[in-house]
Every structure is written in structure tokens, then in C-alpha cells.
Image (cartoon, rainbow, N blue to C red; front, side, top):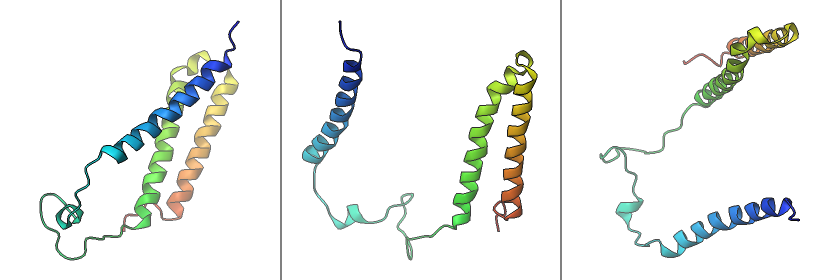
Length: 118
């Protein structure tokens, strides 16, 4: 009788070897012809004027993370809402508590001013 763990071990070995082999082959076979034109900053087909380093406000990243968190939570709520009429009462109560926790988080980031664009 075969051991079922052999398949997991084989998957891990092959899953490790293939990406490493691809990276090594790319490093060996890639052409190397560096020049100043290739190393220059290129944006939209136009030459850059002035400093090409632009620092973004960290607030934009916080806004994006808040959006991502609430977007993922919406994905979790969708199946719950579709099957709400087939679930017992405690599932509805747990869902409402989950929504209240989300609203508390939204209130918190709103009060901290993380949703302001200025």
C-alpha cells in the first residue's frame, strides 16, 4: 500500500525545484548589455524633467489598506447574506455582530482622519 504522504512530499519537492530552476535559467540565459539609456527612467514615452523620485503620502496607503480590509470582509458577508434564510437565529446574530465590529472599525478610522484626502 502506498503512503499518501509521498504525494505531498513530491509536490513540495517539484514545487520548489521548478521556480528555482526557472530563476537560475533566466539568470544564465538572459542577455546582459547594460547601457545608460536602458538604466534611465522612462515614463510614458517622454523624458523626465527634474527629479524622478516622487514620494507619496503614507495616508494613501492606509486608505488603500482600509479599502482592502472592508472589501475582503464584504466577500465574507456575501455567502452569509445569500444563505441567511436557511440558517438558525444565532447565525444571524453572529453576522450582525460581525457587521457591528466592521462599523466600529470604520468609525475608528473615520475619527482618526484616515479617510480625509487633504
